[in-house]
Length: 311
Length: 262
Image (tube, rainbow over all chains, first blue to last red; front, side):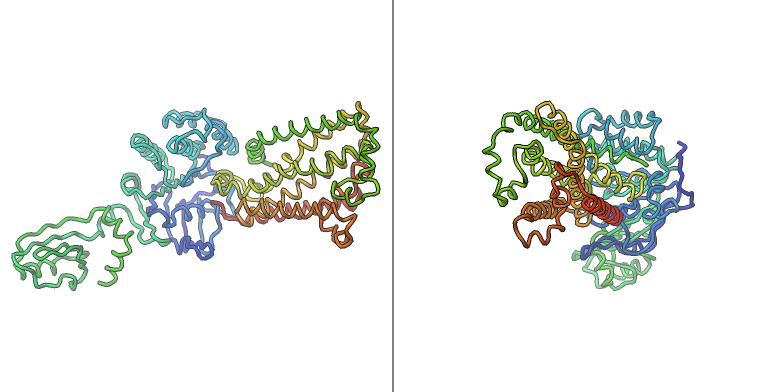
């Protein structure tokens, strides 16, 4: 693909610094600082209501920040909105389309506004997703509307794709097709900003992940990096109830405690845990890295965070 | 100048636009066709002559059986402005606030165009939507020359323009309130209330002293208070409407530019 961009090129496709949006007393996002390099697939993970869509609307210039800076393709998405949006393909979360128009008319009007003349790629996308384009949108299921949303986001061969919950409503086969498409365009150098609450999807596609919770970005790392810094889970079994208070050891949190067994999350060296376990006559030990699901929940779950702070 | 969003919005209102235009055209033809039956009915004139309060409530002046009196009482003073306002206030409330509530404004706002262009295209769509009903009514009135509705061209065009201008004023007000509140209901409610008040002020100004003193606040007074179908529209009224439209349009551009789109 040779995306024809007019916005200036830069090493980073998206950069935000202290990006903040408040809606009166309602929380939007607070101090979001992220960087998406050219050509990477960037996963933006968080539960519903965490601030993913608000961040995306700020990147699209649909909303103005209360504070902070956003640069998309090197430009200010509010002041230079037209130039930015020329090179961006956008799929809104909770996609709504014009109910009375057919999918075909929707795509033709949105494509026309982008001066899209070569419709070969668009038509191949329609075929690929099996999009129903000859019925009024109001008669279509959520999944069928989502297909039209995906086609309109990809059809003008943008340099940057900003996709908000793109596989919402798609069946597993189409989710697979979507993943293949992302891998193809990514191989062609297109940058992808992908928001999702589905860890598997992001893990499969993204090289870098940001996790947002309650309006704050709580972690930004590569998927490998997140795994590396993740705590190990160590389960210990004892012949007698252990005397050691494992929670007092450095870098250790107790996730489950029975009479003669204990499950720990350990960040850093495990030697202190092993020494204490030996002194307590340990009879069995299992150690494994935390999986991303647990890690994800750790960032999500306010109780986990409080426990961490307490230790 | 791009017109994609303007054409899209007009397309989205097409069914209503065609329906209102056909309906109003049919009504206007009927009114015109009935004129020969009533033009000799002096009893009709007796109802309003010497009763300025009743005339004011009907929004008419002069004899009902003259061609301009007949067309004014049946179409231009009440019914046509009502239909045009229904369309323009409806579109004004939907163009920004309604589309934002429905989640589709983001599709237009995510296109490669600036907010000023988005706002200007919405305003142009409003002008397009305000026009056909008044234009088809004018055509019916022109056709009425065959049935003794002998209206001078200048005043007829002036009255048509005045009604369209009035529709644009209130459509812009609805668009503005919608852009400021992001609420279609608020836009409809506030604008309908202001339009109703404006109509009452204009209608009662000739007979109620204190209302007469504030008549200049009413766009209805400037557009229709000077009996444009009989006398045309004066320079003061023209300029007032033009400035009103210009001021509201500028405010709409400003409000759309700063609004947060879902």
